[in-house]
Length: 130
Image (cartoon, rainbow, N blue to C red; front, side, top):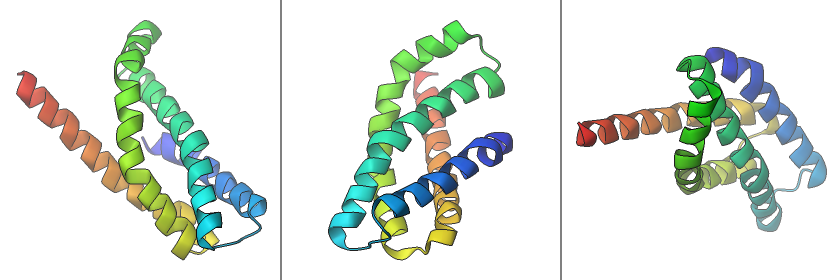
């Protein structure tokens, strides 16, 4: 998981925030922040969730591609819709109040909370099935 964070998510987040600042010329008014959040949620969020599920399935769980693909088809839409209940709020706070140089760190700390939520949800689902 650390490899995924340091090797992929950290650099991706760094360059994403730089790109968004360039696109919106550093503006922090309500309209600009809403557009930043929309761009982030409609592009980076689906992509990152997809990459994460593939990485987790193949590297962490050691599953073959066909099993990962089946799991993606079954669980990806629900995961993405659930993420849209949490990450837009994080994005809004991040773009509105957090200085550029701290945005990846804030995002990473929020990801810890998100990870705890996902793990508790998965455990709860496993307990209800078992």
